[in-house]
Image (cartoon, rainbow, N blue to C red):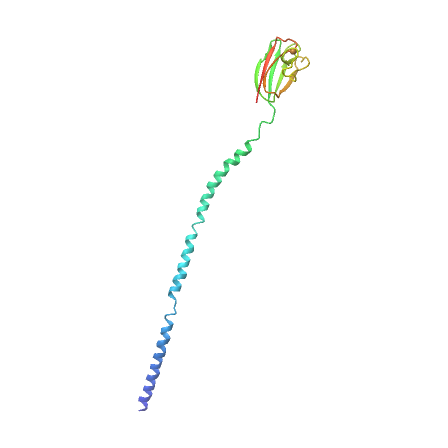
Length: 175
Ligand SMILES: [Cu+2]
């Protein structure tokens, strides 16, 4: 009888253990949050597609550099032509050579006497030289000497040798 009672007690204990273990296992299994891990994993791939986006602006940058380069070169080309331009006209008893020239405004003409006698270049008309009063040597230019005059006024200016008025020339000044 004692053995039967002991076994029955042992069965009760085992049964209680089974009952107690069964409810313990049941709550343990569901709490394992398997879907939570999937959400965390799904959040990481969303960040990856954002990485290739910055590579696109890198390709656009070289094109922008090429477009900005040409205007930078065109700007410094503007300032030029500050030094005066010189043109030489020789004069002798054979006349002015060349007898007619066309020049830009502010060009300096060098009347060089290559003859044997003094010459006096001046604007028309002889003898008053009023068409371009400043254009007048006002003296005889000796052989070997040069009379320089800067033509600031636009126009067609007839000229002559005041010593030998038959020797004529023409200076055409343009803008
Ligand atoms: Cu004259």
